[in-house]
Image (cartoon, rainbow, N blue to C red; front, side, top):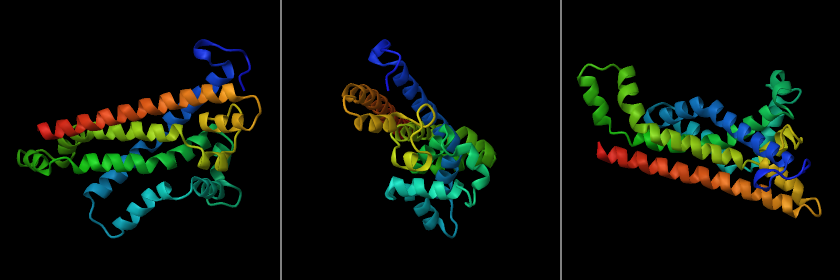
Length: 233
């Protein structure tokens, strides 16, 4: 697990590879689903259409489903014979699949945070901009987006924290392949199964706690800044 000896911070070369892979998976997961998360948040916050409650339920389904079930559904979708089998080679047992699983699990938290931020924007400010001749696009770019942006960023950071901690859907969907899909949670689980690897577990767990705590603190700080900014307007 820690071949190559210890380097700075007490982490071995193999440990750093796991950390960097986790950061890459989390970053790609958030970047990939950010447009969809914002679009869904906007639709749920401002939209009036049949099936809105159903869409809301589907978006938040990964929060209540066992992660193993989510991973199994992804596997069935991308495996041979599934509706997305044509894309199976690009994700199965690869880090891109780990990023996809992490994105699915992070999406509900991102949508929820962004939706609350969009709903908190005072509609009177948007209406005032329209009465001054601004079109919908300009109102969105100059009023709605700037006011909701801290909450949007907070949602993205929260999604990143969730992606870093994703385990069940990932191991079910893409398995635990060293150097390819072995993110921090999977590496910690694997080390727990091996006698004498307690030191590895402690090292990786400490890194995981530090990264997740940092992301949560940043998300909360951004959310509070968003609230102060809206009240100040």
